[in-house]
Amino acid sequence: MCSVLDIPRSTYYNKINRKPSNRALENKRFKQIIMDIYLKSKKRYGAPKITKKLKSLGHKISIKRVQRLMRTLNIRSIIQKKFKYYSKSSNYKKGKNILNRNFKATRINQKWATDITYIHTQQDGWCYLASVMDLFTKKIIGYSFSKNMETKLTIDALTKAYNQQRPDQEVIIHSDRGSQYI
Image (cartoon, rainbow, N blue to C red; front, side, top):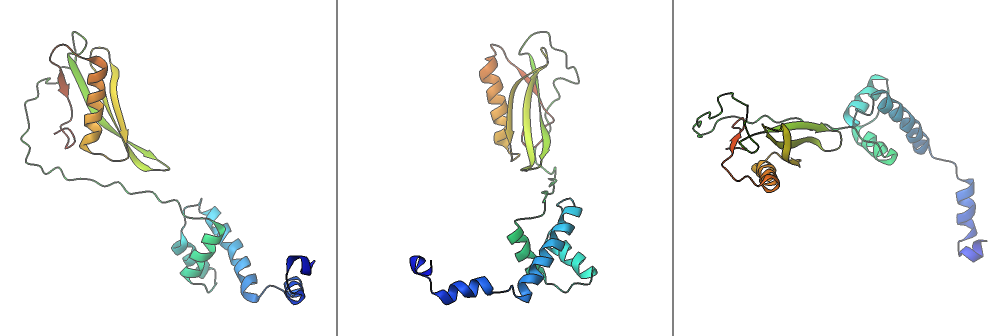
């Protein structure tokens, strides 16, 4: 068999008879402990917390080794992107509130209301949904979904609403006057 595979016999017997090193045995034991800690934390702990937990259990191990072992186990912590608040400082002068809390419309395409909803997803973190509602029919007539909260998000929602409805008269658009709508 060795001649067919073109492998020296010494290499073949060396592989068969070789016992795992102490380091390999220790890594195998650490992998099991790391996996237990990882699963008990509901897959939230990363290498720093696992290392701290191992050290509190009396094991002497470095964070680099934990990272390497986690990589071989193909596990990583669940990271949730933190929500960033933006300041409201702007040189925009507030316009007149035309609706003045009168959200009743007498015909279709007379008054539209629009807003952005924050949606947290497991895979992408914070995502944003801009929607436009006709206040007469109470139906969503345009929307846009994005991972980024930019002006383009609101423009896309309003464009879709306009293209779908094709209003023949002037429409009042009401928003919270956030930076994306300004």
